[in-house]
Image (cartoon, rainbow, N blue to C red):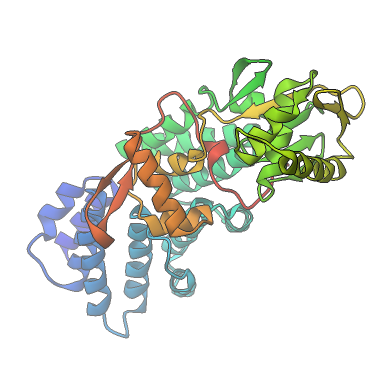
Amino acid sequence: MDSLIAASARALAAGDALGALKQVALREDPPALALRGIAMAQLGEHARARELLRRAERGFGAHEALSRARCVVAGAEVALAMRDLGGSSRALAGASAALEAGGDRVNALQARVIASRRALLLGRLDEAAVILRELDSTGLPPVLAAVAELGVTELALRSLRTGDARAALLRARHAANRAQVPALLAEVADAWSAFERPAARRLHQGEEQPLRLEDVESLLASGALVVDACRHGLRAGGDWLPLARRPILFALARELAAAWPGDVAREALIHSAFRTRHPDETHRARLRVEMGRLRALAAPMAGIGSTPRGFVLKPVGERDVVLLAPPIDGEQGALVALLSDGAAWSTSALAQALGASQRTVQRALSELEAQGRVRAIGQARARRWLAPPLAGFTTILLLPAALQLD
């Protein structure tokens, strides 16, 4: 490695992208191209960074397997920053194995950290947990140690283990202070602020109370019957009834929880579940059928009684009933939560992260754009979507998750 390459690498490690470019800006050899690509990525020029890294990968010969693997890892991180989640993870896994075999432990661990962050973005919390659990962070550089601990923090937050999240954040802050990279320090500070922001709302008889993540965790552990409008399900102690794929049943449960201990009129239930203002006998018959299904599913947690004007929720035992709502209303909550990280997302990446069709995501984005809550940049396939951060609100409870809350 010549002196200019070494100086550029040291500048990149310190977060000085412009200083790194000054050393190698006019060079076209593969090591310089790779460093230029990483520097451009740090400056936010992701498309140019990807092109440079691909040229560097092609430029390294067959005998330079470690250098090629490092380019693959850097390219994977650029793709993550671009929210390009459609590619296969096999190339990254292969690069990690090659780096491990070649003795480059730090970059091999970097590849695993990137894989865990990708899994978190896609809501694959169990996959991310396996990767992070197998990650040996002993002796890692401070920057990589901080990023790994931030991944552990997000996993713990999205599983509502705030004690574990706080401990991981303490470790991340310690590592970030040692690294002294401004962007990393800002990311850690933003993660700390999530503990103080409202994460959900407790609704009861027309009143609402903001709850922090720690309050939500305590509420779910209290044994109350919680109708969770963030994850679309019912929880009572250790019992969990997911209703995300039964939207009509969840709409009925939500109306009953909002009115508890009172009852809800049949007309109000029909309007909420079936979206009609002019109910007839067919709607009333369908309401009886759906209410019977909900009664059967929720029997271990609560009963549903009939009253002269409608239905009432009757929790098992002496439990209270709590309706937990997201910090923002609307069906686009999860979409806004993904966009609020400040990165530019394509509709295909959003659809993959949400588990929805691109057409569904496009319709939701059009509605949000009309409301001024998102904005688009670029045209056609290059179009990307952004939204300003949700000032004052955390979005952990709105993000997609494959792992149910414990």
